[in-house]
Length: 521
Image (cartoon, rainbow, N blue to C red; front, side):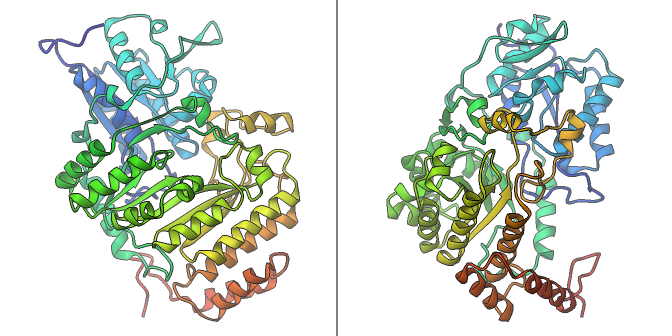
């Protein structure tokens, strides 16, 4: 199908980025205030290049009723409506908005994509709200889907879709992952950046003083993606299913060019790289850092990297990244033994997580390391080994912040199938999936972690955050005592001490104003 002729009246496409939280009484509405609706911006570029009008509503910027009203208003006379959403409340809000669209405009073609829809298309299709689910990488797929809808062509002709036909899920021809050079430019002009700047400035004005070991974050930043997919086949992750373990990246020079243009347009100070695996290519990482330094962009940055990348990079690569503004990285540390690492097919070797945290600390880069407890079939010895490695990270690298989360089975992963075989009962409806809470606090699979190990997990989280000064923003008696607890490996006791600190902290912490968050005199 050819592109739309410039003489053809432009047809409107409506994209909705759902809310991430249910408790949105007033702005700022999102926990991550710098997060742009990147998933929808990326798919909007192709249709815009073909001459279509795109209206993108970011629900995180408005109360729900206002966001949905804007969507319904834009959908009047539109060609199609599409949405996305990751696990959690975005599933709920996307469902609510799509129901309103279907009730008001039952004949309007409606679609959904994103990683959660890709791994559970049957849940989306059986709601009757969507004509198809986009599977996997969506930029080229969506462009072809728009053309097909506009031409009145059969959806079966578009590769990469899941359809509901005669009560059964039918998938069209599979679609491969395309390189970055095949994608249309991102339509950044769709973003009203003031909706993102103002909440960040307000949050910065009312934020407490930075902890002694906490990273200094930019007051105003953006989220940004410079690559798609991940080459690893971790068994707990759905990325191998969604991207087929392929990794496609924009080249370093193009990334720096775009960041320079965006900074000139919006005037931000930081960038949060949302790449699933930013550090696959050391040469590309170095190229980005060198480009930022050469242009004197001074961007405080955050990125997701693998421990094995950090330990194999040349030492001066880390120094270069630090000089270029890298403030903090997120490392999926996962587990604490070689046997468990082999089992989840992670490429991190023994002690790699500790080595990476120390190497980053040495050049002044903070690290957040996330560990998992309660994988299908995991025994208590393995879980305690993971807790022990996290404890060693705290002691070895003051700028490292290890967190240990209960395992959550994710559809589309190998561990998901193992969990089902061991009796895990997944949520049955989109409403149930939308109620999924935080990875780091909610036990999605009760009973997988014994009460004794769960107490140790909670005590570790308490002592590590306290020892690093992240609770009271300074180091005193309680912080030094918490460090001694960690040095002794004393995680099987101490509950009374933790409770005593909780009472002490509650009685001595300055009271906050409910209006401004400022300390009362």
